[in-house]
Length: 229
Image (tube, rainbow, N blue to C red; front, side, top):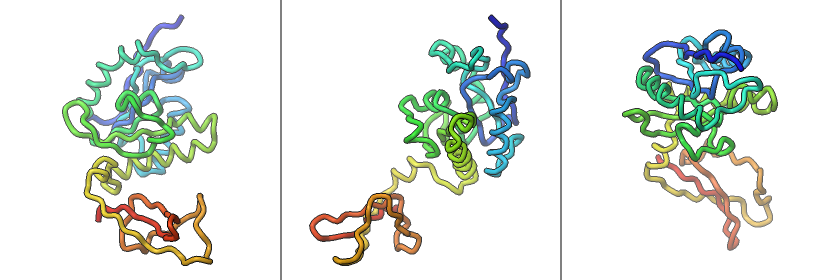
């Protein structure tokens, strides 16, 4: 057994961006600070690359203690224990944007979140008395086990930064706007037909597409752009 030690959040209060991890690790247990170990060093690198250096954001955890050797995922009981404190942190920090680092934090805010599907997508939702934007992010430690995940985690944190700066709009706000479907002709018969995985350059299209698809049914081939402009 080991004596429990509170792992405190770090960063300014109030603050426009709050990052929430799952729990403290062994290094955090020793130092008493969130993301003070190896994952924290990686997080710092990603944040600098995203243009939001660590001192400008507040960082905390769902469960504010070390879960023990091997860093097991917090249990339901531990998550329930840490929830009142996290709610208090959210009210005190009062962020506009919340980045959820990993599945535990993402599902604390959005119980149905699936990381492969939802990571990097900003969602507007009511959190502790006001509308905030929540972004599910891959955990910085994911890159330790899967190098390809490192780039995705960095990309997710860029989404947090862009949302905080206003450069990226929340998904729910976009999806709630009236959409216009515009069909653009593709090449006539005899020319190459798009295949799954082909890239389609829409930068010069008349619509600013949120979604594109293509159809070859009935001899009519076109791509469809859903746009809110």
